[in-house]
Image (cartoon, rainbow, N blue to C red; front, top):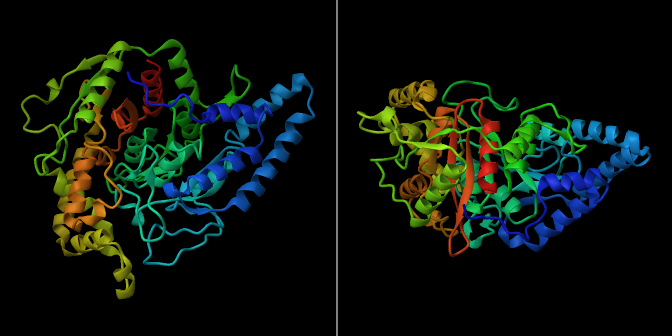
Length: 489
């Protein structure tokens, strides 16, 4: 499989973590390097807000903790202390940032909209609190689209999030700023959230690993089993091992001592074991049919097809078994009927309940106003029928996987569009083109299953192309391990 990483790229999060705990680099140095990279590459629009003073002050505190716990120890006791400290605070000293849909104490939250004033919360959202408790240092807030609705990160508040692989193109969305920051080397990793592809889409656009856990897998996500609960939190990183490190933290996993001297979580151990010993043969299904068909004409770019072929070839070389879709024989469509209309009803349903003043409404993006009008005009019975149909499909998600351990699809149908292309369209066509661009992501949120974006191909222009691996419930660690071995092979 073609490698998509640059050999001169910045150190991985796992390597920086080791360097920090071993005293080879300080938290202040890590934060300074990240802030400098953000300043030098400000044209990428990764951040909507930076707080260098807070980050450096916090980094100084973290360095004091590390010195107090480790530097005065004897060699024998130092290893035990390091294992204990890295278990309690596994991300200690590493810089990160949250997208501007997540409340972070003391930092403005805009939700990517000019329609309402920013708020400065007095405390973190639960996920931010967990990540901060692990020792990570937030630099600021990353760019998002308005309310996280589109799959491109452009709004009226700040510069759009641009793709480090081609700054004329979008970094995707809605975790576009976070993906740009990680891909450009500003951050070693970043937490995101994904309600219809918002981790996997920017990961694919920028050449990253992006994991969408299953519904209710993470303790700080909503635990409602309903299909209305689309959004989950997930990690963005340059490698599967880095993503596993952040996933272990986000999942609240217990870290314990390893042979490296630093504590590891179960996802990290699963990845490292797979890299060392390989994985047993898995049954791999594959489809290029989109649930948006036949309502939308989905056309895959040549590079999207190449990425799929390269991904399947890598899986075969690793000993996995590529299977057909025989369990679907006799049905008219691989996916449920009327998915396009039903998902649009689900996606916009809550917007119809929002109450904006005339002044606020005038400041909303045209696409947001379009979604609000759609929801308000749709008969309630029609919305309920659409959601009920998707609920039924979600309930049978495990059965839908048939004989497969993993289902593989392309990720993006065509290259990330130029900045401003989506917004140049009418709202109706804008939404349709977003669906054509990302034809395989939202259905996995509906199903509530975990999925991961894995880069497999780099085209002649330097753009990254990926496949999506979809697993059964509870298979997040296995997906990370499989992604890691694909990159290795």
